[in-house]
Length: 208
Image 1 (cartoon, one colour):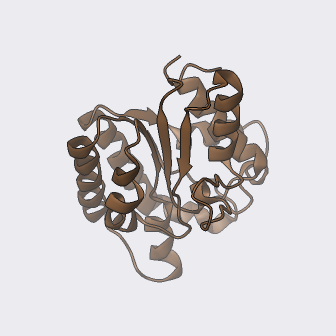
Image 2: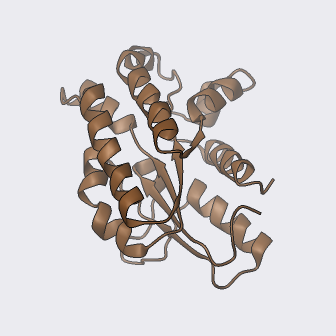
């Protein structure tokens, strides 16, 4: 198994990772894919020493993740870091006229990964941002999001991180069941969508 019984795993990102976690409880995992993954790992490994944290915060962009990297990431000394970020960098362009250009996204994401590389000996897993085209106006978001997906893939190669191609995974599943079945607003996964992310993560870890 690629996850060790003594690992410290950190999930970080935006609302998709946050998923209702209790911020007053440092060990609360929320109710989404991080919780599903943690439950499976804890059952498979039966390892009391395995530590798992969720530090996703709803609404965060990559700049926010960078701003709290020391307090919410490096200080926990994780041996596995899982990052899902980017959709709010696109969303704010359309709902607030507050865009994050692909160059700025890349600069901040690279700095974040440099800090992780320089301060931790950690396995890094990058989950690319994804989008389903429900409601119909989500199609227009592709112009802004696709370059950010490309940046995530590029940085995964540059930093020798593992990549979960979630945009492709969700697109494939949306051909089998309606897009809203996986994410009712095209962004926030349903329970089925969170399970899909969890299965992809666990498969990447060699645990399915």
